[in-house]
Image (tube, rainbow, N blue to C red; front, side, top):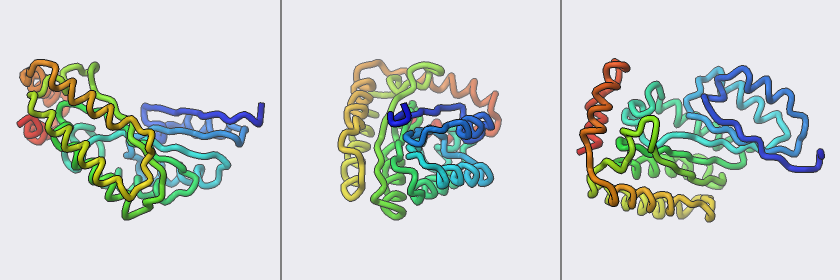
Length: 231
């Protein structure tokens, strides 16, 4: 029925690098659609220009989800291959695109991102505040508990739960002047993660042994910047 409204969700691998993604969009005829795309935010200039042209000339609403959970060099080592400057540039482009009606920040927390997650929240909210504070957005989080299970935050020392408290405080204090969805479950997600850390036994050896194996596969990985997040 052409009057029905549909939400089309597109997940990864990275959709903006897939020719099939753009081919698929050409065959969507119904104008009463919201397209929700989850991206790693690392789309190169040529492809982001192509994607934004489609967004700007379409009749659809667009929701853009961005998967990340850290800043700077830490983010680039957690998400191997990410260029954080490119991520920030693309975020600003989405914020300034009127057909993007909603942004969804989708962190997948892991043992290396807990300690400085509050800094990532601060970064995202500062970019929104300085670029387009009226843009609607929300946070929808998860955590690694499989593939690889070694990065589950439950293996962290119990005092790391205090970093979750810091993230909650930062989320509250830096979102006051922004258009963040009141229905977001971000606080229950953060509290569940805090409980996950507190209710399991510490086992940093599981994490460091995995990192040692990973560094042989990815020679450009900065192992020290990741180890620092376990201190």
